[in-house]
Image 1 (tube, rainbow, N blue to C red):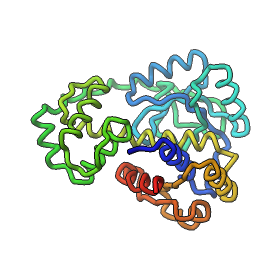
Image 2: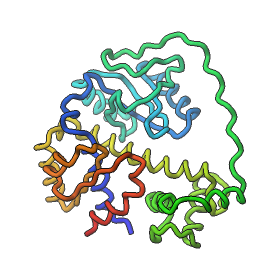
Image 3: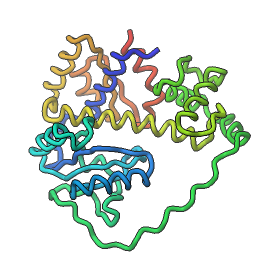
Image 4: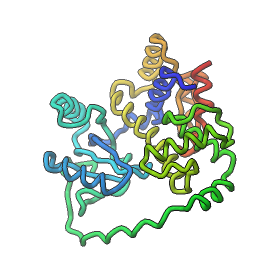
Amino acid sequence: MFRPVALLALLLSTLFLIHPTAARAQDDTVWLQVEAHPNLATATDRARAYASLFPETAGFRLRSGWYGIALGPYPADEASLRLDALKREGQIPSDSFIAYARDYREQYWPEAGVAPATGTPEVVATAEPEPAPEPAEAPDETRAEARDSEAILLPEDRKDLQTALQWFGFYAGGIDGAYGPGTRKSMAAWQEAMGLEPTGILTARQRATLVAILTNSLLTIGQVVIGLFAGAFSLVADAAHAVRTLAGQGLPVHAVSVDQQADHYLRRIFGKRCSVVDRVEQLPRRLPEVFAALTR
């Protein structure tokens, strides 16, 4: 069973995915990320709408595979002021946050765009041939094919899907990799929420989408928190102070990092309440362990 306080603490913990020395060496220019979408067509339409108001609008593919929309880049010392002003005026969503060039992959907007800039506040577009149309998406698996591909899933992969369904509120059972009536019902509910036929059996494509959405959510949450606290808690001492402040407010904190050298500084901040994973994709299967630590 999820506890809102524990969940909030997990979200806040993603602030510390960045090595403190890296935090002190952030780029001279930053971006204001305003939206992210799972498909290119929607993201392009939204980027076009933003560009009518903000000529500095840019769009980049995120590490999770989603497509982010950002404004900038701006000098780092002006970005927070710009972010606050645009939020206050209602010109950008209230959950917009500061992001960095390292957060982005290839650029898709402007459509003849270039790689994310880090040293100049202008987004420069170069003339390029019109991109070739994206190939048509192959038909999804039939119900029988989905059942066959599901049958060969590894136990950890089956648990990952239950974890993702639980994270988004569709599943309340145990994370055991056994797909009984409860899991089938939650799969059908997720499919229905996504506008898909509620068969209760996820196709390979749907399984990949579900896990990708969870991974992107974790990454986006981490970027949001980093943006909110950047500059305020960038050093180890300040981070430790932030943890103590949260503890004083009754919020348990558990840090998760993908930095394999994190032990020597994370434990100075969080004590035993920290975990290190080899890669971001492992987060879904490590969530039960983190939740257990938060709810002890």
